[in-house]
Image 1 (cartoon, each protein chain N blue to C red):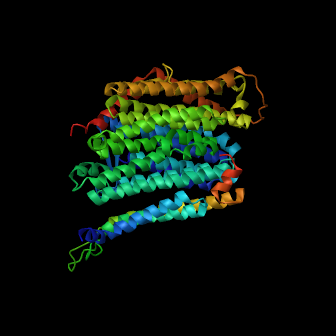
Image 2: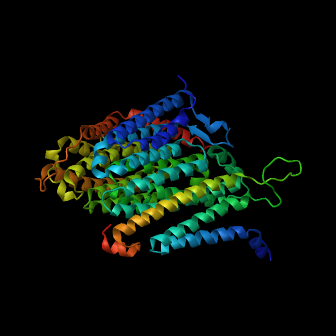
Image 3: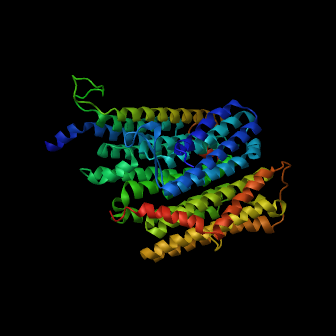
Length: 120
Length: 493
């Protein structure tokens, strides 16, 4: 019972770990450059959750000073993750544009086929 | 003279400059502006260094928000030297860049390249200056993203693949780093490095902290190309434009090492990281694998840029080895080697940039007889190469000497053998190029592009700097000793 309770109490961490490993696995296992980028995005998304979920306090409100509320959630994780999302989008955009250029130059976005053609 | 905002202007000069240079299309105007901006950055770094050495640690509250809530820029004896080093290399490479970029990059992309160069500098300086863990991540990504763009601008189409591979690896590394910070943040509720270091010993359970140490170590090791995580580096250095290679080889990996040193000795503290020896042992084994393995691979390369890319991995091995030894001499060796290797690799890749421009080839056989045609550049190259091996009287010798002293103080004699072996291997691959370049007859005709005076001039200046620091060792070693003292001051706690 204790194990199940612990599992339920910290289920958010299990979701995070699942996404993290799934994302990383896609990056490693797939040869298609677009799929790799999708995996990378999933991997980064897990980190967003890692920051956001501990920032939530049950019953807590946004940190606006008001006599009716006494319990506030920490806003800092959200701010940090907004920054991280921007960084993630920039990375994804750059990765996709590189993939477009690679497709123009090599006529494929499969890593195996490129490595067969070119000596790197 | 006191300037209050020096830590902020250090970052802002290249950051704002990067936006403004996009306004111009004329290569010479942009180049002059970039040179001026990097010169200003360099002067700023010198002033900052003077201020730190006169009045101690500078804590600068960015935007007026007091730390630990706000972002703190914290300049001390460790990062002030490295800020000077990175600004100096940026200045040299910027002065060198004009002709090389004209030859290697098409006209409409040149302003973007220069903008990326300045943004990369911004990111690297930011990582050095900031005292905030998340801010360091943002700067890490600024420098990385601009690096990917610079690499992708290489002439060879394989530069795209190199850039893509680096993007994947680099993003995984940066994400690992953020996971590590996230775990620390959950446990301590702070992102200020100084604040974390005080709270890290009061956490309720140590396990998440150890997990964060693992994540941060792996993440930063990817960025600094520690041995099994180095696979992005050879292609990135080989296919990037010469200017980008010279700048990255001399700064990017060094800044990552700084971050690792900062986390090991200041944030986590010696006690957590090196308490039981196994992280130390792991780092030592990987460093030795890098020193010997990468040097062996370098011997069999036919592409000169790739050869020295592998040599960079080997040299990073020395630096991480000094960190892993984790005593005073070892750290001094590491810090001095960061400075020395930046100068050496900067010189070598700038010289290679000159040769490649003249020969239009990176194959080593084509370098036959180049010493007779380009004696000045080849002399600079030879001086830097000898430093790389670590001949007594050159800078490379001093840093290796301190790392060896550190190993002996710990009683690890077998490390001395592996350092000597790695130096011998360096002698083999460097010797091969020197032999071909000075003593063989030319095989292929060089093209008619004329090298600009500043290219040769800057390469020579850089090589003379390595000679100077080899003969006058007091400056770098004394600075490194002060820095190592401050890093190790937490041991007794």
